[in-house]
Length: 249
View 1 (cartoon, rainbow, N blue to C red):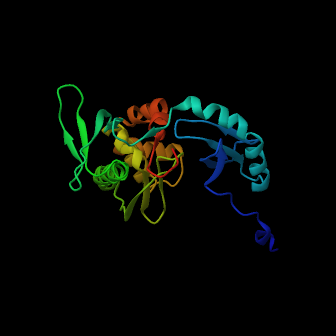
View 2 (cartoon, one colour; view 1 turned 120 degrees about the vertical axis):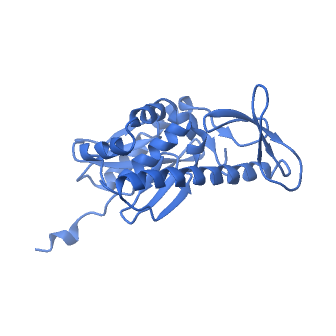
View 3 (cartoon, helix red, strand yellow; view 1 turned 90 degrees about the vertical axis):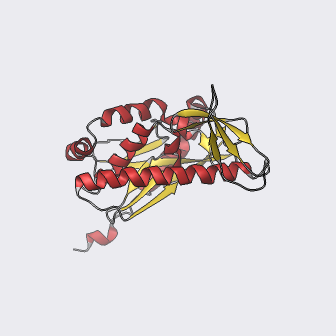
């Protein structure tokens, strides 16, 4: 009669495991079709797929058992990148050379050059990565807010809140309350990729799933959605390699 009280708790949306001395976030996906546990490495990052009725304790044990498999494959995905002077940061998909100006004050500036545009970052060397990171997040928030608004208007829904995260396995997430989380690294991708993720997450306000109806909704607001989706599958790991300051990279 009260069997619902004995239902096992839902697994988390992601779990962090330590691989070679550094934390790695693994996304968790419940699947009605899965007959067994599966660990994979798609473009967005590590993914643990578990059968819908499986116990989370068993899923955790499976993940720990295969952590060496995951650790052996992650380094091949992409070399970790840091936001520091001398790095070539792909702002909106275009490589920019990071140059420390040494000036105590000021904003990050884009300086066009004949061959490689530059990002001039003020502050001392130890503070420059944080300043650049904060500036990139500001640019990402502006772009994502604008594109989310466009897709929300097309689909007749309302986005109530937009925040940026540093997920290592997700490009975005959306709640039924109209709150959307985006990965700050999207500012490093070409604009059509950022636009695809914005369309994807806003479409969840119409369909909170990944059904055929959901994909039809994404295509309704962004007919060329496959272009951005394909780019992420091909290059997503390269973007995920960029580490925020203080991450131990």
